[in-house]
Length: 345
Ligand SMILES: [Zn+2]
Image (cartoon, rainbow, N blue to C red; front, side, top):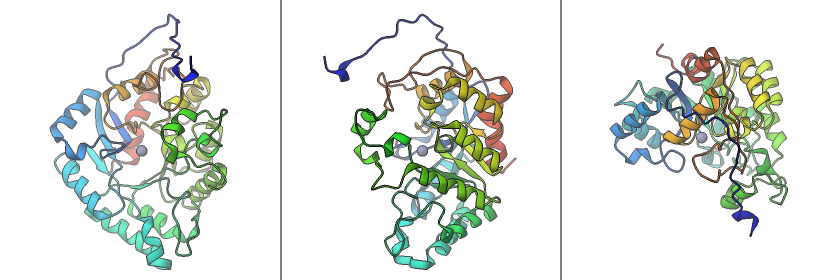
C-alpha cells in the first residue's frame, strides 16, 4: 500500500457532540462570497444564502470579496448589502497592480480610493497576502509590509474608521522546502502556487516582523490579523503583539486545524485575549464547516476531523475542543466584532 492510501480509522470511544447552531448568534468576521473561496454566491439567489445563514446561526457576515477596484465592490454592495444591510458588510481593497504606472503617487492615489470606497459603502479594508509576497513598486522592487511609503493608506483607513483585515504570509510550512518534513506537503501538492519557499521569497519571520512594525506604527488604525494574526502556529508570538498593540485583533478563520492540535495553549490564549479574538470561517457559507467550528469552540470532544472533507486538506491531523466558558464564547462569537466592526450600534 502507498502511504497516501492509508486511512486509519480511530477506535477511540469518546463523546461526539453535534452542535447545530452557535451558543450565541455569530458574527462571521472573515469570509467570502465570490469564487474561489466563497462559493460563488454572487451568482446564486440571495434568499437561499440568507436561509443558509439563518440555519447556521450567522447573524452578520463580513464579505471580503469587494476586490481592489470599485466595479467588484459596487457589485457586491448592490447584490448583498443593499437588500440585506443588517446581514452583510463588504470590505474594499488596494489595487497593487497600479503601483508601476502611478509611481510615487501610488500611495496617495490608493488612499484616495479608500475614501471613494467608503463613500460607496465599504465598511473595511481587506489586505490580501500579495503585500509582502508579490506587490512591487515602480522600480520593480518587492514592497515590504512595513514600507513607510504606504503610511497614507493606513492613516486614511484609521481616519475613515475603516478596520483593516490584513492577511500577510501564509502557514509557516508554505515557506519551507516542499519535502518529506513539510507538514503541509499534501496541501502544497494540490496547490503548488501556494508554495513560497524562502529564498526566493522573503523569510516568513521577515514578513511577520513587517506586520508587527506596521501595526505598532499606526495606533489609530484598527488591524485584524487574519488567521490568528497570520501565525496560528505560534500563539506566544501573537499574544506578545496583542499585548504591545491595543489596536490589534485576530480572527480565527481557517486555523482551527492549528488551534485544535495545541488545545491547552489555545484555550489559555482564548481566555487571556477574549476581548481581542473574532469568530470567522473563511470556508464560504458552509453549514458543515461552521458546525465543526462550533464544536471546536464549545465542546470538550476529543480527536476529531477539523474539516468536512474525510481527508482534511491542510494536513492529516485531528483536533480537540476548547469548551470555552459562556462569557468568552459571547465575546468571540459576537461582542468583539460588534464593537470593532459594526458601526450602527
Ligand atoms: Zn479569507
